[in-house]
Image 1 (cartoon, helix red, strand yellow):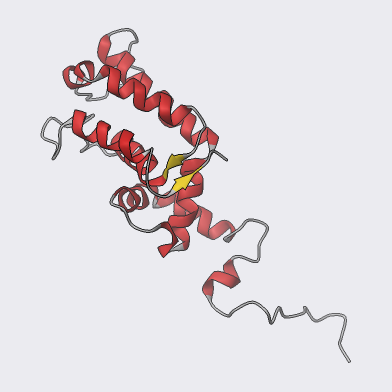
Image 2 (cartoon, helix red, strand yellow):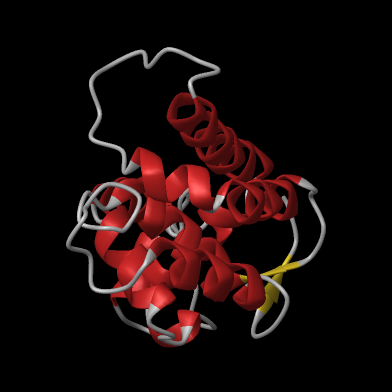
Length: 171
């Protein structure tokens, strides 16, 4: 005999933290979404380094966030905006320390990268993470003169990675 006040247990779900957090309305729950947003830069760094997205729930969710159409459009606008500011076609909205000369020298490559991210087709996860890291990390060659790698190499590698590896589509 069951009582109507008791909530039925889902015995088919494996026990553990993931299943407890994923019983909400959103896959992974609100908590995982908040933590993933807060840790986005670190997760992008891991994905750009080639870590398997299925290694954690946060990485898997971050792949979905990066693949979302709105995020891809934001990344493409930011790349195009950096090129426009560096070339003098647009005044900066806030003070940023863009490497204007380097951006001007690699304008065609950065615009091609922006178009590839924007087009909404199937792209590589690592490439999206590399673009996000290029834009968000103030130590990247887009902002820092003493970056580990030149802008041309970083942008070209991101463009290549968009066309290979684990693939994702725009949500």
